[in-house]
Image: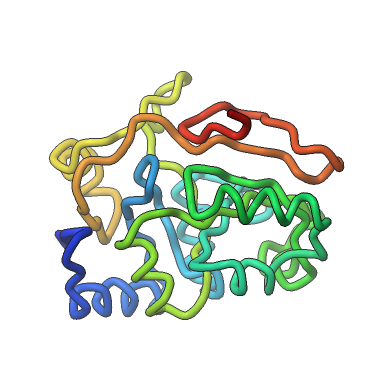
Length: 205
């Protein structure tokens, strides 16, 4: 199923259609402020299993990122954040960054793993924000790229996304062209922030 959305004029009926699909344990391709992503409802075990199956991994092995709507929602899923790190997050989010933070026990339990570090994002995109807001909980996500390629080739054009994934993913949300560059990944678990992948976001200017 294809749902087309205008990021400058959000159709609430279409957002509800997407949210109903996610609540029912479905996975979906959605736009973000960087590359397109594949997502599920964080609190849907069925959705997490489907996303892990797509990645051909067990849930505990998949490197998910969590997508949030705001800082209040993010704080509900993290361990206590150092004040200097929190100031950094506030200065860069919403935006094209994935911050590796310590998750709380709730997240660890959802993923059935002992690993506490997880990527967390607040995207600057009206479509994904509307989905998360209506859903009322974060999304678990993984990036969208050619699964056969050793070197990751990302998708940006809606027509290309449709042609490649229409027979693989139940729901594709098209919201205009995406970026070809992923988010900048910043590890904040060791005290000082460390860039582990330079992407679209500039951490220090």
